[in-house]
Amino acid sequence: MEFVVGRAISLMAWDGFTVTVGADMYQGGALVMSPGVVRQTKFPGEQEFLGKGVSYCATCDGMLYRGKDVVVAGRTPDAPEEAKYLKSIGCHVTYTAPKKPDTLDADIPFVQAGKLEIKGEQAVTGVSLDGTEVPCAGVFVLRASLAPTDLLPTLETEGGYIKVDRAMKTNVEGVFACGDCTGAPLQVAKAVGEGHIAGLSACEYLDKQDK
Ligand SMILES: Cc1cc2nc3c(=O)[nH]c(=O)nc-3n(C[C@H](O)[C@H](O)[C@H](O)COP(=O)(O)OP(=O)(O)OC[C@H]3O[C@@H](n4cnc5c(N)ncnc54)[C@H](O)[C@@H]3O)c2cc1C
Picture (cartoon, protein in one colour):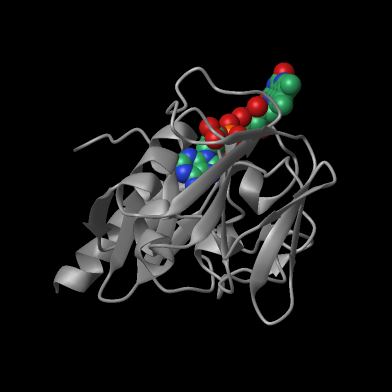
C-alpha cells in the first residue's frame, strides 16, 4: 500500500484509471473518490472557458501555452511551484492571489487581487483582476478542491452530490464515492462508514476483474 499526499489535478478513465498528482501519474484498476464538498465558488467565465484556455493542471496543459501569456490563479501552497514550472517551459507567467506567497519566484510578476473574471470569445483572451485587465491565452486555476465532475465529467450527480448506490458505486464502472461528496448528513460518522463500504466494494470489484 502506498500513500501519496498531493492534489489530484486530472483523471483519465481508460484501461483503469490514471490520476495526475503534481508532476506524477498513478495508475489503478478502481477509484474511490472522497473529495469532500467544494466550498469555493467558480470564477466568472471559469466553466464557460474550461478547456478553451482555462486549465486546472499545469503539468498536463502547460506545453500548449509555451511562448504565450498565462495567468496562474494560486489558491494552494504548491501553486507557486506550478507557476515556476510553467515559466521553466517557456510560458510568460503572471501570478495572482489575494496575498503574495513567500515562495513565489522573484522573476514572476505578481498582481494582488481577490476577484478574478475570465474573459474571451471562442477562447480565453484575458482576465480582469480586481478591475485590472491582463491579456492572456491561458488561465491556470489552482485550488485545493476540484469538483469531482471537473475530474470526471461523466459522473452522475443529484442535487450537486455524487449519486451512489448502497455499495457506494457511482454510474461509472470501477468508480466509488464516499463521504460528504455523496450528500447529507455531512458528518464524520457517515463519511467513515461510507469509506469502509467503498473500500470493500472497490476490492471486490478488483477481485472480479482478476477472474
Ligand atoms: C467547521 C466544521 C465543523 C464540523 N464539525 C463536525 C462535527 O462536530 N461532527 C461531525 O460529525 N462532522 C463535523 N463536520 C463535518 C465533517 O468534517 C465532514 O462530514 C467530514 O470531514 C467529511 O469527510 P470527507 O472525507 O468526506 O471530506 P473532507 O473531510 O472534507 O476531506 C476531503 C479532503 O479531500 C481533499 N481534496 C479535495 N479535492 C482533492 C483533490 N482533487 N486532490 C486531493 N485532495 C483533494 C480536500 O482538500 C480534503 O482534505 C464539520 C465540518 C466543518 C467544516
